[in-house]
Amino acid sequence: MAGLGRRTHYRKHLTDSVLNDLPEPKEIEKIAKVVSTRGLNQFDILVASQGDEVDANRTPQLAILPTKFHKLVWVKRNDFVIVETGDDSTENGDDKKDGIRFMISHILYKDQIKHLKSKSLWPVNDPEFESEAGEEVIEDPKEEDDGIVYGNDYYDMGEENDDDLFVNTNRLARLEIQDSSDSESSDEE
Image (cartoon, rainbow, N blue to C red; front, side, top):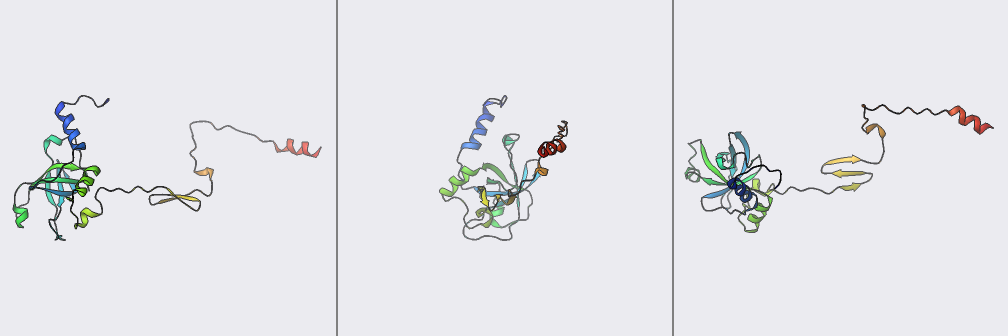
């Protein structure tokens, strides 16, 4: 923990709990995906659908990050979170009121998402939550012909070209003179 500077006991243990705990949503909590950020710790989220029905016309809802997480935990687009519902108007379908309806209680990382999937608490039928569920696939380099594929990029390694190499212009290049006349005259004799 060297180099972290001074941190209070509260902030140190809050960071530890965010990174290492395995939270599970309670009755008033739901799993959501951050769609965009609005600034001032406000986020647009898509709440996971309950049951087998998936609403295709879902609109992003507004959520806020509590002050205890300020300058300690950062949330970016496409992150998954557990949110507490503030009022019951979203469950009844009453969308007249535009405002902050959710408060982020947990930020989910890869290990926490795996834990929720193993406990069958992860939304299964929702396409927003199936494909991107924190599973970043890193492909191993595969050799093809005379090239290498990293991710979606193909690098041709068949021809070696020195023109692509970096040339340091801060150093003077060594001037080498090859005298071909001396080698020709020695060969003739």
